[in-house]
Amino acid sequence: MSLYQAPLRDFQFVLHELLETSTVMQACGRSDFDAGTIDQVLAAAGEFAEGVIAPLNASGDEAGCELRDGVVTTPAGFRGAYRQYIDNGWSAIACSAEHGGSGFPTAVENAVNEIFGGANMAFSAYPGMSQATYVNVRANASEELKALYLPKMARGEWAGTMCLTEPQAGTDLGLLRTRAVPQPDGTYRITGSKIFISGGEHDLTENIVHLVLARLPDAPPGTKGISLFLVPKVIPNADGTLRERNAVVCGSIEHKMGIHANATCTMNFDGATGWLVGEANKGLAGMFVQMNHLRLGVGITAIGVMEAAWQKALRYANERVQGRAPGSTAPADLIVLHADVRRMLLTMKANVEGLRALALWASQLVDVSHAHPDADRRRDAESLVALLTPIVKAVGSDVALESTITAMQVFGGHGFIRESGVEQHVRDVRIVSLYEGTNGVQAMDLLGRKVIADGGIRMRAFVDQVMAHAETLHARPETQEFAGPVLQLARRVREISSELVALSVADQHAAGAASVPYLRLAGHLALSHVWLRTVEATRTKADSGDPFYASKLATARFYLKRLLPQTVALCEEIRAGAGVVMDEAALPSSS
Ligand SMILES: Cc1cc2nc3c(=O)[nH]c(=O)nc-3n(C[C@H](O)[C@H](O)[C@H](O)COP(=O)(O)OP(=O)(O)OC[C@H]3O[C@@H](n4cnc5c(N)ncnc54)[C@H](O)[C@@H]3O)c2cc1C
Image 1 (cartoon, rainbow, N blue to C red):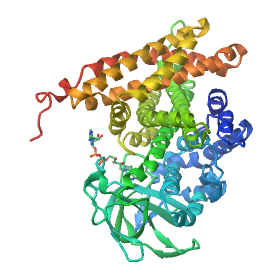
Image 2 (image 1 turned 30 degrees about the vertical axis):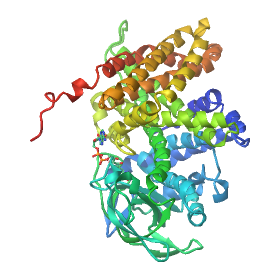
Image 3 (image 1 turned 90 degrees about the vertical axis):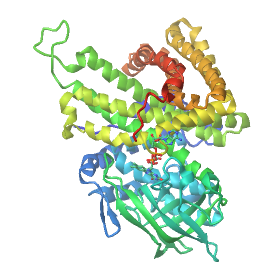
Image 4 (image 1 turned 180 degrees about the vertical axis):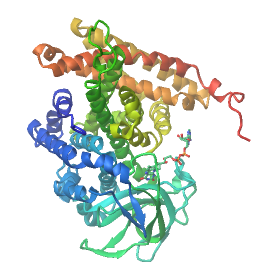
């Protein structure tokens, strides 16, 4: 039985037929990524995922990580797999050529990340965090730090972390207390304790580069007084050889619900030597480079786990015989023939395919925002990435969790049993709604900072884009049935966004009470747009006899008819307002 199969055909469809990645990259001055090259990379990623890391998924979950005398040991097989990972060049896939990287487009990088996340989420989270650390150092550090650290990080010889959270400072980083004291030689002494640090300590690499948020002695209070420091586990010499162990140790590792094989560490900094990254007191803005990269990245990992669960459920539904289907004369039939099981399977399929297309589109926009020669295109892409990032992170992870639970439902009681492999997916994917900013925080980011803060201008531009596309397809008889519901939804989102912008002036709780259903509503807007583009890309091919296209079209119809109507309830929920939420009589006080 295959544990996980990279969905290569769907990646080819999304990257080549839907997003036309090679053409877009050519417009961005990169003509070296033709479809053949991209397909080769995806096939190699699939081979590595299926053959090397998927077989370590269940055993890694069972064994977990171990901490002894400050040393974290990853589960059996992880070191060897990581060695192959870097020898195959995966750590360098999207790094810059000057650091020895391959510079692949973000959409390809994230397609590969989805594959690795689906095969083994706990394993892929180590290099995933390192990639994000690389991006942060590249964007914010001095030339000296970049020259010393980035080639090692691109080769995967040195890993990376993000050290924000402290016991009293989770969502609210303004409360963090870790101190940084300047030294005469230009370095800083970092002292404090960070909790929940992913990959804070492990045995996969010889060095780990911690990016740490801390306060200078004269820093203003709150988020305006946070600076960013690079603190290596082992301090290197100027030539990159390792010199001496820094004063940072892992005090404990967490025992947690899922991703057992990914070490979640308490890191104690006891006067550790650090180097300032970027400007003093501007560290949070610098760290957002890494967080935004990770928000897209973890959303994509969740989509990978959802794919793995969906594959298992589909296979099981085609093997398990139980109950007679209506009209059948057999003693019992495959459960895939029952309407309710088909509903569950199609819900999972529509979710995973829609979210994959959305996440890879957002990834492509990242490249357009950096490299397109037209400044207007760059600006529009950046604006859309800002809207789509919290959607991919939060809708991706919430829907992935729902889908893994649905996969368990397809298995019946057998899904609750470890051997099915499905319950691990539920436990693993649960974290994605919580870290890199909880999904509640993503929703406030979307509604508060990206919609209300600019009077709804950015969201209106997106709605206009969705509407213009839907109107074109509505005018064609063959696509009218698909475009109608999208047009209707776009009108609703336009209205409700304006209402919330107006309401938030008078009611300070309006945004907080509406943000989570609003994010889900906006997620449907983005997904319905992507499904409509999918219809456009498949319509003429659906009669070709290739079942892939017929299935795409049928799944688009399912999404638009069966899942999109959830938006009516979401609008009702938003319009119910903050009053019922803030009613003091409703929640008993705990004292
Ligand atoms: C396995 C794991 C790995 C992690 N990896 C890392 C890592 O590598 N680096 C790192 O720095 N951190 C890491 N974290 C920490 C993670 O990012 C935090 O747990 C997360 O940001 C939430 O903080 P908290 O747990 O303190 O929750 P809190 O901030 O206490 O939030 C509790 C609840 O209150 C809500 N809430 C908080 N503030 C507001 C507000 N203003 N308005 C409305 N609602 C609010 C939240 O949405 C949440 O529902 C990890 C955590 C885990 C469990």
